[in-house]
Length: 305
Figure 1 (cartoon, one colour):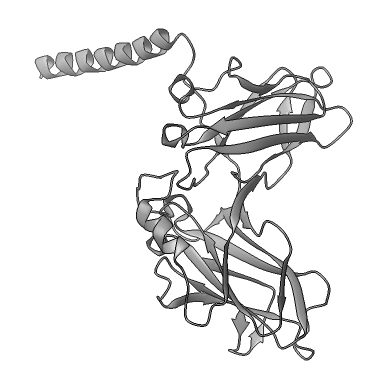
Figure 2 (cartoon, rainbow, N blue to C red):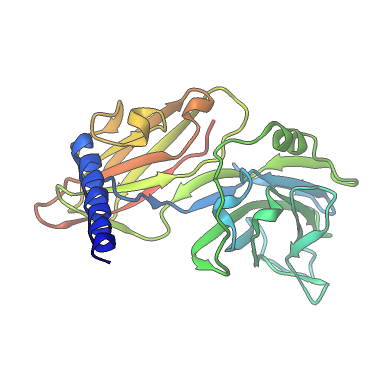
C-alpha cells in the first residue's frame, strides 16, 4: 500500500512539473480562451424582385459544427411596404438542408397559409449548409433584405464533440454553385458578417481577446475589415488582429494588422492568403480611454471579399 501511495505521489509531482515547464517555456501565462463574436448571414444589399418570384439563397456553414444545437433566427425585412397579407405584401420562406432537393426543415408559415417576417428553428449539424427558397407574394414589386443569425445564448441541446472547419469543401462549393431547384429563377448567397450581440467592455490598459469564425470559400485570397467603435465619450482603443498562421495562433501586439491610434474608432484591414490562413481570426482589443475606467464598444467585421 505504501508503495502505491508513493507511486501516486510521484505521478502527481511529475504531472505538475510538466505543466509548469509548458508555462515557463512559452514565457507567458496560458492564453485566454477567446470570446466568439456572433455571426450574421445577410444579403449584401437590397433585393428587388417582382411579385410571385421564386429565388433562393445559400448560407455556407462549413459543416455546421459550430452551430449544432443553437436556435437559428431568420428575418425578412420589407423596405418599402408594411407586411400585409391582404394586400399581397408578404414573402414566404422555406428552409432546406445541404441537399437542395431535400425536405423542408423550417418555414415562416403559420397555420400553413400565413407568412410572418420573423421565425426561428433549431439548427442541427446534420443539416450542414442551409438553402432558403424565397417566394414573393402577389403584389407588384418587392424590396427586401434577409438575415440569419445563431443565438449563442439560446442553445436547445448540447452538441456532440466535433472538429470545426473554416473553409468549404469542393463538394459543398459545387452544390452551392449549381443550386437550382425546379422553379427557382435566381440564386444568391447570404454572406457572413460579425457584430457583437451586446456592448463589450474592457478596462483601460487591459486587453480582451475575441474570435471570428469565418467559413471561407475556394478563392486564394480574401480581405476583411475589423472595426471597433466606442459607445461613449470616454472610451478609446487599440486593436490587433491575427491570422491562424501568426505565431501558431497566438495573438499579441506585434502582429502586422493593427490600429494603435487610441481613438474612439479603430479600423483594421486584414488580408488572408490561401487555405493556410483560413482559420479563426483573433482580435485583441486594448482599452485606451480615460484612466482606470471601462471602455465600452461594439466589435464588427465585414464579409470576406
